[in-house]
Length: 487
Image 1 (cartoon, one colour):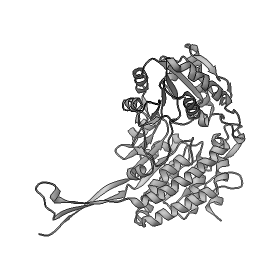
Image 2: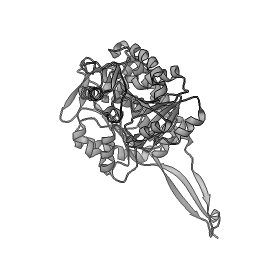
Image 3: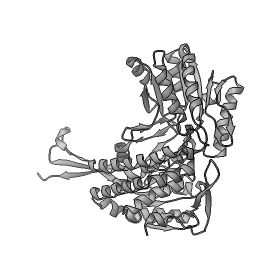
Image 4: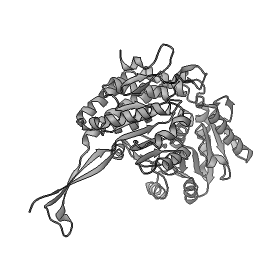
């Protein structure tokens, strides 16, 4: 019987992976995971205790030295096999992912396939970790009899905490680089999205990953969250989630390496010479893909007042063409992940309208479903100008100059990405150099990929750099062995 089949019982109660075995919670406690769009049952998630979480960390620590000693080509081979298994199961896993987080069917399956490619690229890139030798005579007062051999070594046990919105891709973007570099992993998925995460783990287990190298910790954050991040045997934390939780983890974890991908308020700056047809297409795609539940979604438009009306003429029809409804029918806009998220987005829209914003289209709500909303005449005293909606609500702020656009963009607490739309490459670079963000997209929507590009944020948007080679670097450290040659 394969690990994939051991993952669940007939009653849809899922198990967690610990030391190579699929286990049931000792307390017998489970949480029902239901589809956000129709409340149908996806499955029952096991709720682990702190004691069980401690066993997961202990198992990972015990397995780490032997895994680190394995040749990198052997570690890479297992990752390649995991990618193949994941791709073979793309439709099945994608169907679960669709139900669990209300992502449209096509995008859910594509996420699984994209993740398989990510793992393969990581497996290959892991073979290219190189060191260097340094000779003492390059520094005054020393000679060539002193030589430093510098190489990279794994950090130890990596705690990988993933979010709900990309439960396969953003989990693998943490797990695969950690594994190929010789670390072991304790994987904590978001509760909504955890079943998809367990299916990802099953692919690694079926690929022949040794027992203890990858352990899962599932359950309520209120029970095991603080325990995990403060555990002395955790060597590194890689986290994707909200900025408030990220700051809390950083404070609790203390002096260990961390990489954090947090919130964003990505601005699209539109200059007068931009091709507005291109701009509208990229903005609508960037703002409303997966109902805006992306940290890199376009979350506000900063457009020169002289062209704002012309841009709006192009935006409104595109927004109104977006299909709304059920992810099983491949709708573009689907219900948000939970009631509180829908409440929050609706509150931002109501606040803006109350303060004078013009509702161009949308603004309707059906339970967790927020119709795609476009707001004009948004001003800086409105919450939606600054707060991250994580939903399908897009504000337009009219500006009179480049500098005003730059000032508003930089006044945000966030600094993930921005877009600049213009035909003037000098203007694009002039503005890009002044924006306080990790990445500037020129004539394109804000987005994460390709996955080998560097991805990072500043201010409340995160710390550290991701992207395959960069993640590999972050999950290793340099170690120097100095040889003192005899005279």
